[in-house]
Structure formats: structure tokens, C-alpha cells
Image 1 (cartoon, rainbow, N blue to C red):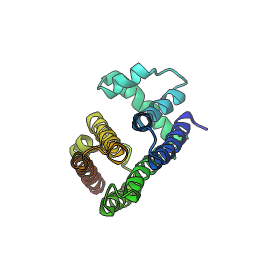
Image 2 (cartoon, rainbow, N blue to C red):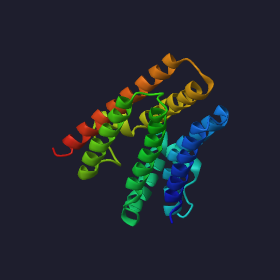
Image 3 (cartoon, rainbow, N blue to C red):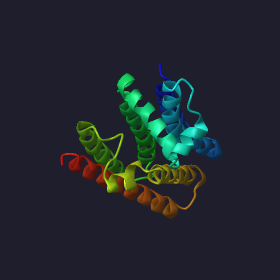
Image 4 (cartoon, one colour):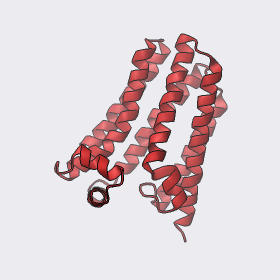
Length: 213
């Protein structure tokens, strides 16, 4: 088993642990720490795949340098990623599947607990289901080519931003449910997160449509 796939399975299992801890109203600080760890692992599996495919020749610092725009390292990492696509074509889709299971687990538990209205969950599921299918059929989910796609979906700022907002929103929902924090802040954070998710979905749809040109 590839280490990147193992990381996906681990974070998926951890998300289910988080759900259980929320249900039993465990210590919020522990739950929030685990949420942060689950989100962090989402960024780590990509490096693990590159590290393994390069036989350890690309360090984490070099991987970060590529992500930050170092042209020489970016080309080197890109070359390794192309090799990964040939040897493990399922890897990218497994990563997306892991993302969805983690995210749905969090949305579902807070809907089940009546912290969130069900229409929020439905919006997220519908958005992901149709956009993921469209992107998979076009084969453009791993590398955006349009300026909108790069800015809203594949850029480091966009990816980092969505993860930060997810962490803040889900962590605050934990505090709302267990510690009785004010609901208005949680609803604002959820509104921002859903808007962010929809905006990225628009970028993905635009990317897939332009790929026909």
C-alpha cells in the first residue's frame, strides 16, 4: 500500500473518531486538535506520494519550495507527479474520496444533532456530487489550466484558505454544541465556508467547460 493512500485511510478513520467524540460530548480541546490533525493530513498525503515516487530524493522543504513557487523545484515535483499518475492513477481520486468522507462526516453529525439545518448538508452534497462527476469525466481535477480555476481551486492560497475556513467552522460548531458558544458566530462561519465551497465549484465547472475548447 502506498503511504499516501495509508494517510488517506488514517484521516478518514480519524474523522469517524471525531464524530463519535462529538456525539458523546468529549473534551472540546481534544476534538478540535483532532480536527486540525485530520485537515493537516489532507496536505501531507500529496508530499508522501511525491516522496515515495522519488525514492526519498525530494525532501519536505523542497516540496514546500515548489508549492511556494520555486520554478526549478516546481518542475522537478511536477515531473514526479506525472510519474505517479502512470503508476497510481487511482491516487488522486482516492484523495478526493477521502476528502468527501471526512467533510460529509462533519456536516452529517452537526445536522443530526440539529446544530445545522438539513438544507446546508443538501447544498454541500449536491454541489460535490455533480461537480466531482463533471471534473472526473473531463479529467481536469488534478491540474487547472484556466486563470479562474487556478485562482479559486488549485492555487496554494485557495487550498490553504478552504482548509483554514473548514477548521474554524467545524471547530466552532464543536464549541457551540458542547460548550454552548453563541450560535451566530457559528452560522457566519458556516455561511462563509458554504460560499467558499460554491465558489470553488463554479471554478471547477468553468474549468471543465473550457477544457472542451
